[in-house]
Amino acid sequence: MFQTAIGVTIPFPERILEEFQIFDSGILLNLSFEKLNPFIAEFIEQLLEPLFFVLELPLSEQEEVKLRKDDTYPFHKKVCYLDNQSKDQIKEIMQRYGTLLLNDGMSQFAIYSHVTREGIYIQKYKVVRIFNTTLAKYVELFEKYNLRQTDNILTVWDTFSHNTPGEVHRVEMNGINVFDVYDNLVKIGLYVAQITEG
Image 1: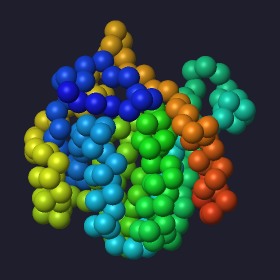
Image 2: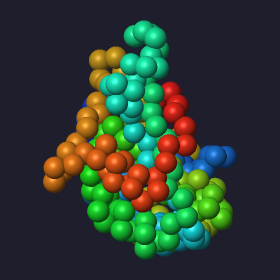
Image 3: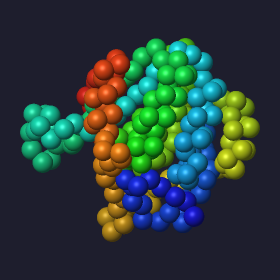
Image 4: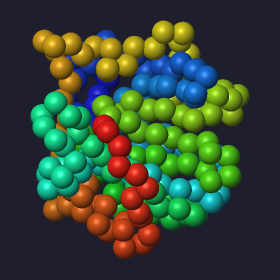
């Protein structure tokens, strides 16, 4: 059965298939949680250096209070960049924090090439988006992970309703959470690029 992260609850995992669909904006895919980390590692190998790392996380309660006028306004998130990284540097980030980032339900992250803007984005509920529409480049990788192409992908978002919502939670591992990851990455150059609704 399709598995998901510790920090994510989905109503109908049995309805989610490991498959992908090609759109004008890129490739959307479902991949069971236990396969995400090795898939990302292999995807990184195909990117052209230098790379950049993106971390998206919700504002702290104190930061949010300053932006939200009342309960009808949406919540906000920080979009943070760590530029000009080698593959080895990205691998080190993933080795240190990848398990936490993948299990955490509140944050999202991405890894892109500065040169080609090709990249992989691990979105809320661990839906994966690849920013490149050239399927030929990924045929072997997709076949290795038994991903089937479809013209009508069903993601976890399509299974949510008022009575069957999804839920996300912040996760702590080895005494740290995603806000600690943010603080640690700021020390090596991570910066807030923008604050958006989300």
